[in-house]
Length: 295
Image 1 (cartoon, rainbow, N blue to C red):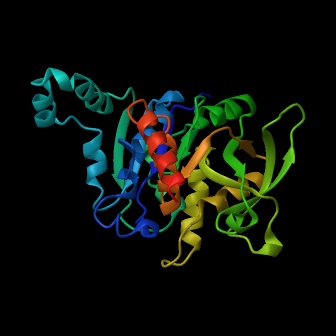
Image 2: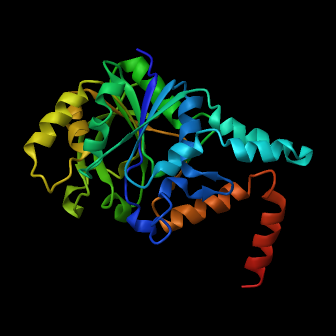
């Protein structure tokens, strides 16, 4: 079955990038001239996703505003022929070729609970999850890479890359094995969240993209019912159960990933995108050469 729907969880508090995220959602922090959430939505659309649900919470209404028309702004730009290119860019955001919906996660109980908020939206279809912290850039969208794997094998897929031993302890570790005839796809049988040194299974970590079947909602409901009110439900717990039942693949995706919930990740994204942006590439490259030469 074709993957047509996606959930983007964007309800986190952004504590790693405070005070910037005190009043501005971290998903709205810019990479040169576009907020992070726009890159993620554009990736979903480029991957063939038709319906997108963005999970937010209080104080994040600006995300919804960003994908709406801005009549006063557009009217002002229309009156200036020199601003035609800017007007086109502004309108393109509100005319993205997908249906975008919003719902609030009223209590913070983890990523698993956030995904559960989208059950009625998904219905009985497979769906993609694009983490709101992770911008991943590549000509062949990473979500599309995962969708092709799902459509070929009919199994859930997690997008992974190898990370350092120190970083793996902040993410999760995967038990993986090769699939004959596949270069970048592996079977995944186990996931351990934030492993200790002794628990590390491999240096592959899930980095922001997942394809899941609708059956996970029953598993998530059961998981929520089983934990105390003050604990969070990890989505990896459910995915690990899928792996134990031979229903999970790991895709070593091709793409440059930026952690937009991390100060260094934000700086890396802006620097690298600026070096490729048609309006900034030449002058920014000259600036960096001069800066480095002066240090």
